[in-house]
Amino acid sequence: MRQFAVVSGGSRGIGKAIASALAARGFGVCLLAKNEEVLRQTCTELQAAYPQAELIYYALNLSDKAACAKVFTDLGQQWPQLDVLVNNAGSFQPGNLMDEADGLFEEMLGSNLYSAYYLTRAMFPLLQKGTLKMIINICSVASLNAYPRGGSYGIAKFGMLGFSRNLRLELAEQGYRVSAIMPGPVLTDSWGDIDLPKERFIMPEDIAKVVIAGLEMSPQAFPEEILMNPIAGKI
Image (cartoon, rainbow, N blue to C red; front, side, top):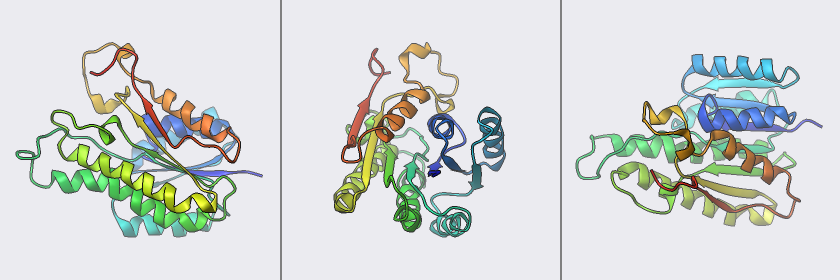
């Protein structure tokens, strides 16, 4: 019986690596992100790599509650259930709270926190029909400790970990497994043209391997929170 997964922020970086790992294991995978062209390119690439995979995508602003609700409606007409939800969508802009640009606070909360809250609530009826009942929230080391110029991003990531912890407590008795993964620097295009060797970074595929490890555990076990860092330490 085929199982199904939704990956937000699935067009590149960590989300793309997770979507690829799930498709390789026979999951039907729905990728969500803002940029429709990049989503289309990613789906085409994954479909070529895994011809038997069922891949679909929706372009939307995940901080828009109505848009998340519409995806649930559309997806519910195609899939009988949802087994895995990966809340990975997010964005980063550095800044200090007292002088960062006006509106950055709302932008960081929207992309990094509201997106997970709205999407999880929208997808919950499909998750209730699934067999795995897994919710994986991609948080950050910024969820645990403040750091210079973390600004509103740090606040949003603290909130993401709080969301994950509350969700786990609320749903544990119903058999849901809720995990928060907190990576340090991951080599994605969000770092731009930073001049550092790749050995200073975690690879996106490393995060995907952790997700797959959770899938392969016995039903009564699941990692609640995982902290990951490069061996070389902070950047």
